Length: 336
Image (cartoon, rainbow, N blue to C red; front, side):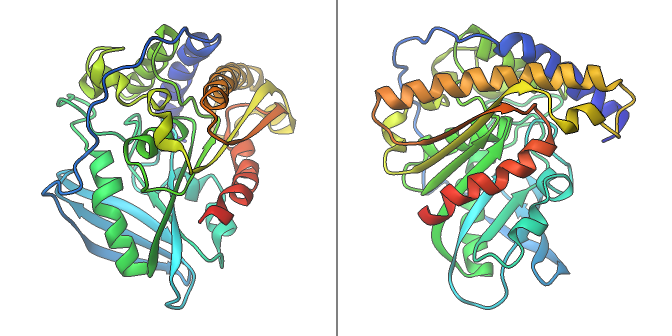
């Protein structure tokens, strides 16, 4: 990544490392704001497409809700047999034109030839893939929830022979977003996956993490969900919508931040010493691990089944998410 992008990412990860360590106390049930209406009055179209390989097509989708073009990569098998779709979300430093899952996560090689439409939206940096409440000078007012849940699936199904069976998964920020999207749109997804995500967004520490993530690109999280811990903010916290997750296959993975071989190599795209890169990535993964465990406890108490893979070695970096993709897919694929 570019030096400026790495500095922004390092800054937010440093804040998150402090913010996420520890488990926040949860408050009572929030009044639930309604999910996006099914008949939202918005539409989108595939305005252009480019065939990159026999299995990869890069789309430009013109979206009414997003107010412009969204870049979307689709990995799909050949032929016209119906197949399910999995929507894959990036973390806070999402690629602008092509998803980081494609450029860093090895997804193109992993999904080649598999019987699924793997869908990768680009441009979601620091957005939480949600509908922003107000205009933000830096982020704008994206309407990701409407785009991802109402506009894009019909286009994907029509163009790539989707059978209406959907899953959603992501890493870090995208892992959180996967749970929020699913809990606010019951029945849309049959499977949810999170690698190093933090599903819970209320409580002082988690609210600080959300704010720091939005600030990564100069955004203000209160433009996204209103005052921290307020009604609209809490309506996006899946811990208050656990019933909506019943019947959905759930996979969560996190690690304890112990160093592995990738951490000893450092980051070839960064000028920072390996020990600094490791310290940031380890701190954030420890926080994500704590948050993942917290959410697992809530799911257990609510008797919502899930698969939890807690790993000792691993930090907050793509080397581990690439490996986690295969483990996650083994759980999600049968549900689709």
